[in-house]
Image 1 (tube, rainbow, N blue to C red):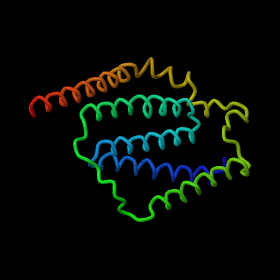
Image 2: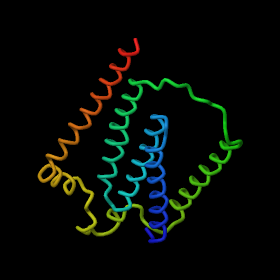
Image 3: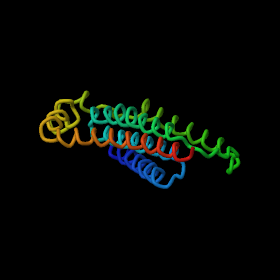
Length: 178
């Protein structure tokens, strides 16, 4: 991959990750916050791919963007969002602008894929360089299950406690309102 394309992808994904993080913090609706988190997680996964950490990127998408975000949305649905949404369009023509932007992104990505002279997976097309294999299963699993196993298990425990606490708060609010 040429340095210019790599820098462009990095800048775009960094902007997307920051925009998603700001959405998580600033959105008044928890569902919008969860969608901002999804955008951030996907952007970070692309940044992992840029660093040739394909295994870490796959785990990012499967575990965090898939399982953890599904758990968050389940808890949000269980708690309930009690206000109705205003479905009127505030910006006229916003759907057309988004459709044009999405089409441009697809065309640029297609053009890069078919007409650029770089390899998408450098590790598969060149001799294996041990410095570039930081995202393999072995490179990820060895420190995770030796040096960082306590932090890994504590994170799983904290996520479980947070979900149980959200459920308990939801049931407490419902009982107090009745």
